[in-house]
Image 1: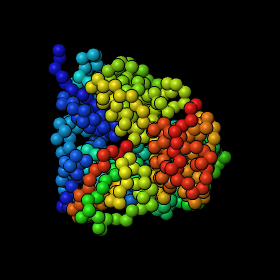
Image 2: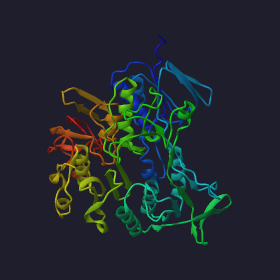
Image 3: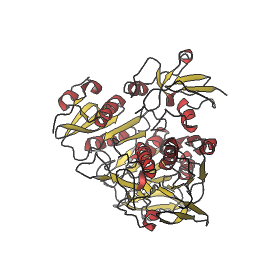
Image 4: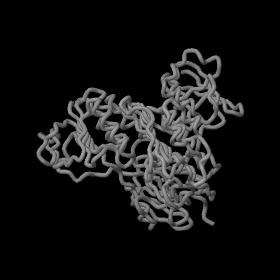
Length: 418
Length: 104
């Protein structure tokens, strides 16, 4: 038998660090190498879209672990190496970086994440035009924002609205351009979309829906305006394009692994070869909360990345622990704190608690008379109650939830038989 | 440097020095102290960094915000008068916290 060369984890990110952490917690003593293309040790990404309005982004403050943690855990952290070639068989394999460095392994974890979706837009190469995914993106955006007066955000999703809210709170003139008829259409239902439109407008941000952008124009290599179809021009010192991400599957494809909107994995995180694991933003897995049997989902969220990485690490050691976490998400838009529990797609009834105009409300979603999800704005108690009910297979009857002044936590009951 | 003491449910103690202004949560997570999950990374969004502050250190803690208060009402382990979310506790001087049985 070949010597145990240990585990190679490609992607030094939230799920990559969690795979390494979980392997050690599960008692794995073999070598672990965590390799990432960025120059920094792994760090938290969510604060990037929220904290860049202070003018600087200190990656060291965002690091998941201190350098000596990696040493003490005997985890070899390799930064600044981008894996470009990968081959493996049942005994293991070898990964090669763009610098020609080789990493041999017995077991393989892909935590390759996602890359920003790029817009093929005339003028997007101009100075002042940004995407936001990693710490170096955030540092460049923070520097430009510090001296900007007019900020245009292309894409009314969570990243776009978080940056817009922060820029507005620090006194910029802010315009959000969204191609769809409503904001955050991928993640929330219409009632919550409408709340976000009204709430951001109340704070002085201009929201333009159904926006068709013709091009970006500038002078001296720097963006000055966003031009819309029909000729409207929106002044811009900074443009942030936030139109979603695409999973990074190119290494999985080199291995011949099944890929369809992410690397396809089973409920315990194993890829189609039955030995490689994939976790986090790059993976597409069966999710018990998706409507219908065997529904698959690729989730972009920190809690998901952590939980998925844990069960995938177990699978790497031969233990099968099906993924069962209730999906949940949060978005921090200045004074607007959104928490989402569950998946609202396929709802047939809603219950609104509180008043959206007061920036404190919850929208509960039901299907076949049973709660399936909630969007909670500045309402953490409602969020926690719904998340706990869903996690335990319980229900919160809609008629009771609709009563003002009730505490959802006290309304949780056994679900009626379907 | 202030010292932060983490007491596990089984009584095992870990004492760590940390920079003033760093949160109790980050102090634990960055050094891999088990028992603090901190899924949301410090935004008071997940209630998985719940701790019980030891009696001698209760004075002088920052006020509990409305958000923290609501989240503490729904923690996995029981809320007690000395319950806090450790992401909201910036270390100013020595402090000791006891970890709950469960966070999720």
